[in-house]
Amino acid sequence: MHVDLKFVKSSDLTRLVERPAVLFARDSGQLESILEAAAIEWPNAPPEWFEQRAWIWLHYGAAKLARGEVFEALGMLAFFRDQVLGPMLHRRAGRPQRGVRRIEMLGGSAMGRLAGTIATFDAESVRAAFLKAIDMYLDLRADEPPPQPVATMPAAIRNYLAKT
Image (cartoon, helix red, strand yellow):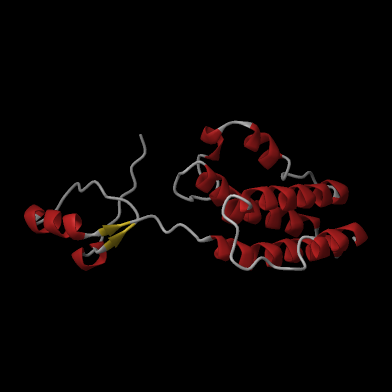
């Protein structure tokens, strides 16, 4: 069993991402009324949040690869999985968008596709992983398209990767 302890002031309990289990309270009645009135909602990102960032982050990682910074490019792929692909996979499954936390529990073909975005320490492997990340993003984006997709993408990033 793993337990995270968090000490908070009662004024910090008005907006929560989940209902906490209270182990100790000086005034449990007051605390219970605060928790009953709290807005409990996971901060899921809307489609435009992903679109506004995905192409910038993918280009940033591709630029690292173009400069020969393979470790940085590998790190960017991990970041992209955590910030974009993982949350979008959770969204597809109707779950809170929690990065790649417990993503394996979703199972199915998506896990194989997500694993394809994990590269080895080799420029060609990293390039291939970026292309798979692009394809996966486009597939997941189609579930809830952003109101204003970036017009030049994915063609521009694919062309850039082809030149690196």
